Image 1 (cartoon, rainbow, N blue to C red):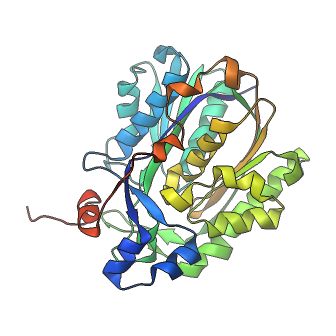
Image 2 (image 1 turned 60 degrees about the vertical axis):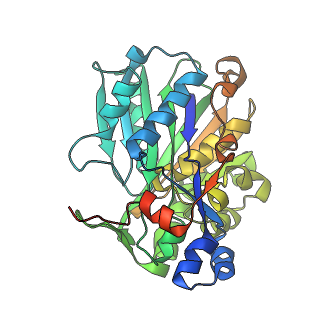
Length: 349
């Protein structure tokens, strides 16, 4: 069965606290953190972008399991912050890990679910026999306009998953998607910051699609929340995934292990992939994981995953940092340095 062969994640070490952003804009940090369930967020270093994050995640995945890069027939990177409008991030990743030139590659965009769309594509290519392994990555260095609500959560990070059918550490039993034209969040070419529909992003956006995809999978696969040991949802904040999990009938014990947004922020295309990576860091053979992403515009991809014995026999998880370990040795920035790191200060040419 097609599944995850190995995985890796990367989160920059820099952070800014919600209270520091609130201080600059004269907002109440307690109200913001209380409403969002987010207390700090990751910030990329001056020389980090989506490509470097994707490369780091991919290298971590390959460090955990010895795979010949020549056997990787596809690399797909999902993001809404690719460094170039015309030059694929995926080829940079492929070159960095030694998978070029006999491979196919492309950059994906679907707001925050581009990474899970990449996983689905790799599943299809592997399942058809066209390739042996496919590398799917979700990564972003998200931006929020100064003073906007998004600035408190827009973060940086990503995760990579090598998809194949040779002794997978986790079998992907099924995936189902739920998609519609719902413009709750958008950014035109050339614009520095996205715009959003505020509360419209909730019920007609996030909840309609996350609940729709989740219930579709449960119906078609004959499963229920009680059948899973863990549940991971797209996490733009802590409030949305918690509410979705509770509506569906998941418990805190199921969804909290994969909920990293309170101390990492919203890594956009990396959000549910990083949550899945955090879950795989602690999962044991036989554990069943439910995953549901969400991308504005809008759509959700739901997955039913079962962890196998290979989680301990085929990979060495200690050869790359876990998501918890990636949140150690942090360096906190004030707003001025944060603005420089995020490119919010535009110098005259």
